[in-house]
Length: 231
Ligand code: URA
Image 1 (cartoon, rainbow, N blue to C red):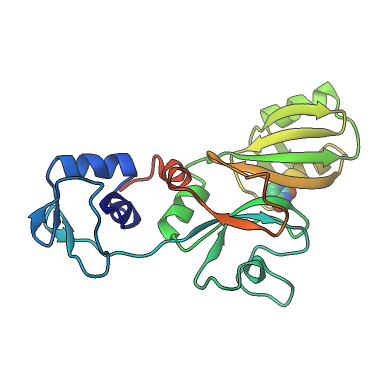
Image 2: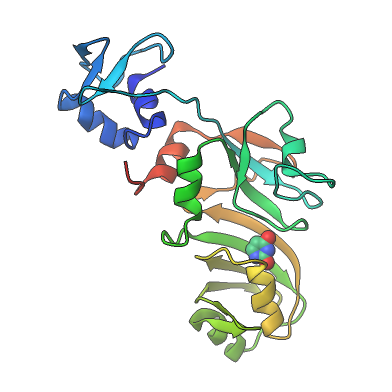
């Protein structure tokens, strides 16, 4: 595998950060300074060091799943879980939670630090949804969505609303509170009838994936997700 891929999997930095580390001569392969981040290495045989410290290679897997309705976002359960959709993968977990009846983008990975980065309430990672709701919204409703709502003692921070029709929209939130979008609509006396996640940070659902299908992320998608992560 390429040295820069191994370095970024070992959390030495993003692909562009690790390229810089190699240029600065801080990375060694079996005691010899690495010349280029494109060099091929064997992560299980070669000893890779950064500033003299050995890096441990952990093989990370990143899958984009188009979650179908009817599956819960958990690793175990008596009802079908999203793990049942990727039976050949072990040690993976869903990065975030979608309700059982919600469809769409779910990142499945074994990369704990990345999941932490994406889910931490401090990072305010954007999540964009396609929403169908029962009743048309008033201007006042839209204003409430855009300025934040307190409902049943829970505060939902401002969301970005983009109208599609009287009863459908794109909604972008930055938190991940329990049933967040359903509660926002319930607080307005409305009801979500269909919910699909389209985007998380800069990762967009590949619309060629049918519900239940998945594909590995591209290197670029992984790098984009890791953008802004501390080393
Ligand atoms: N908000 C919800 O209400 N449900 C989801 O699954 C995701 C966001």
